[in-house]
Image 1: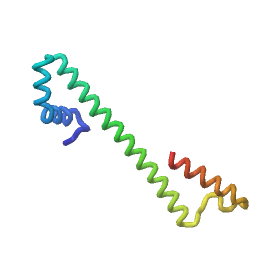
Image 2 (image 1 turned 90 degrees about the horizontal axis):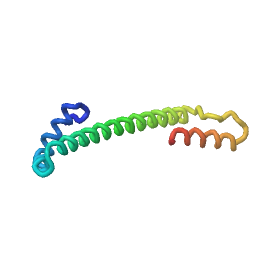
Image 3 (image 1 turned 60 degrees about the vertical axis):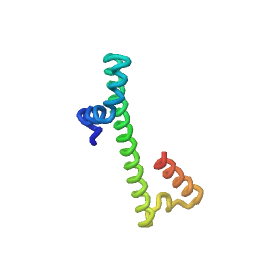
Length: 101
């Protein structure tokens, strides 16, 4: 079922909530049922948007991790040429913190 389109959301609501909505409609009337349907549609759309955003961010972070892994694997370690090992650790910590945040 495609919940990313208006038609898919409408179909989902009508198929899965028809019995519940009929009971609510009889008790509370058509105005409240319309408001309920509008809120359900909004919630589904908002959830889909948030999930898309989360997965996009997750993909970007994974690409950064893979890039960092490939740099380490190839021996290209940032800050390796510096003489002070504290600076090297500090540089790595900064990059890892940036990737993970």
